[in-house]
Amino acid sequence: MHTVAVLGATGSIGGNTLDVIARHPQRFRATVLTAHRQVEALVALCVQHRPELAVIADPALEAELARRLAAAGVRCEVASGPAALTAAAAGNLCDTVVAAIVGAAGLESTLAAARSGKRLLLANKESIVMAGSLLLQAVAAGGGTLIPVDSEHNAIFQCLPGGRPDLDRSGVRRLILTASGGPFRGRSRAELAEITPEQACKHPNWVMGRKISVDSATLMNKGLEVIEAHHLFGAPAEAIEVVVHAQSLIHSMVEYADGSVLAQLGNPDMRTAIAHALAWPQRIESGVPSLDLTACAPLQFEPPDLATFRCLALAYQALRAGGDAPAVLNAANEVAVEAFLAGVLPFLSIADVVEAVLAELPPQVVVDIPTLLARDQEARGVARRVLRDAC
Image 1 (spheres, rainbow, N blue to C red):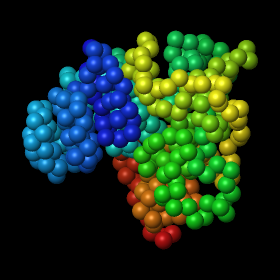
Image 2 (cartoon, rainbow, N blue to C red):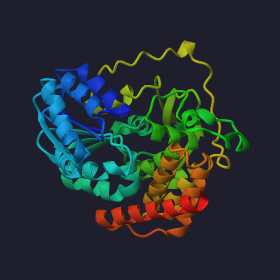
Image 3 (tube, rainbow, N blue to C red):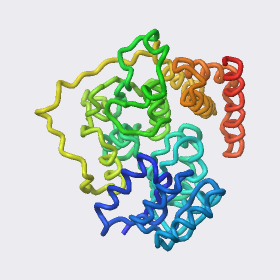
């Protein structure tokens, strides 16, 4: 029986994880559930899954959470704040941690799980984008296991021998990340000038949160995944390629030196990757319907439009620059996306803000987490100033 902490339980990854867990009550139990501020949603999940600990990130909401849980007849510990999240990830209530908190807010708890030797199922791509080398060092020091949950990286993991990211001895030539192209695939810059947050959040294939949906629309999400693939699999930027595959049936591919290309296919449903990560190296039922190849349209591929969707090019630029440039990229993007969702910043200007911050803050060597977090805050400050000047 694996005991599982779901960090970010009220999000889309969290909900899908709990769906898979509920299908296998003899194998998994959700013992820790956390949320940012969604008290009502967290209480509903606690009623269903009966964890031993519920954590709300906002301390001002702890009393309300405790009151509602008591009223619902749920007996579990209640805690709040960043320190409680970190303690939950590192504590003895779980042996597996699903890191699904969105954005830089998930960094500390993800690192705590890694240092504690947990089986870490990584869905928080920002953690490895910001602190890739430090996270991998923490996993090695803790003696745990890191399994990617992002569908693309999970697909690559499945296509590597034994799931091992040892490219030097595997004869790997290229990692090929597939991208749906988002809701605006094929549109010109002129056609994107008046895009609204509602339009950007309507992904054609996947059901996701608002921030990641915007990142998918700008292709920044794919850029972050390029950086993530670099850290997870030790691949240089030139060995990581992005191709647009609108059907989202091939989740990624690995090309080998002999010309073989291995691809992982499946319906666009995150439960496949989650079930694989939870049960690895075994396989379990996920609730995802079988892929009917005879009903699929012909599989199509095209190169990404880097001139229109500049965020992907900026991510490659940050990866090649090295140091903390990816952390600066991520921080600037989070501020810009927040402004776009608030109706303050035009869609096309998201890339402009990120580019301006990267230009103002040359990369520095990644030393430790406090320095990295300070740099994150500096980048956010610069991004907000750029926004004020632009607006």
